[in-house]
Length: 279
Image (tube, rainbow, N blue to C red; front, side, top):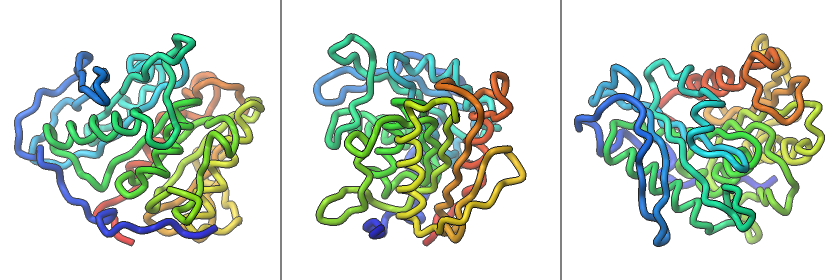
C-alpha cells in the first residue's frame, strides 16, 4: 500500500534524439543487438507515412512461452490499431533449458537489459515521444510486462498485460520500500478470460497491485465499451487502472473468438494517455 518512489525524470521526458533523422517506414525483421555478450534479435515496425519530425509513441509487444517476435506481430496485431501514431517493437526471448523461448522475469536478468537496449536504439534512430512508452503482452509476456511496469516504472507510461499467470513469488510486485523495487506511477489495463483458472491468481494480483499503488479505491465502474471492463475509482488521471474480463480460456482475445478485442482495447487505452505526462 505504500506509494512507489517517484523519479523526477519520470515526467515530461521530451522527444528522443532520433527526431529529425531519416528513417525507412515498414517492418524490419532482421534487427539484432548485443546484450550481456549475446546477440539478441527483434522486429521493428515503423508506420507508413512516418514523419521524422513528429514524436511517435513506442509500444513493446511481448510474446508468450514458446513464441517469438514474429508470433507477437502475427497473432496480437497491435499494429493494426496504431493509426500511424506508434512505432512497435517485437523482441525475441532466448531459449530456456527446455529449449522453449521464455522471458526471465527475475530482477536483474538480461531480459531487462535487452528491453532497455531496444528502447534506447529506437529512441536514438527514430522520433519517439519518451512520455509514451507502452508495454503489452500475453501469458508469460504479460508477466514480464507486469514486472517491467514495476522495475522500469520511471520510464514506462502504461502497461496492458493479458492473463499474467503465477503468484506472488513469480510476480513480486512491491512498491520501493525496504523490501521492494517497484518505481514510478504506471497506468494498467489488465485483462483475463474467466475460464482461464490457471492464470486467475496472477491476473488479479497484477490488478490489485497497480490499483492499490496508484492510489485508486475499490469502486469499480463499468465502461460503456468494451463490455466486461471496469475502471477503478479515484485513480490519478495520469495512471488509471482498468480490469477487463471475458468468457474465454487461455488464448488471445482477438474480437473473433470472443467479442472483446484485445488489440483494440489495449491501443485505445494507450492512445487515451496524453502528453506531457505530469503528476
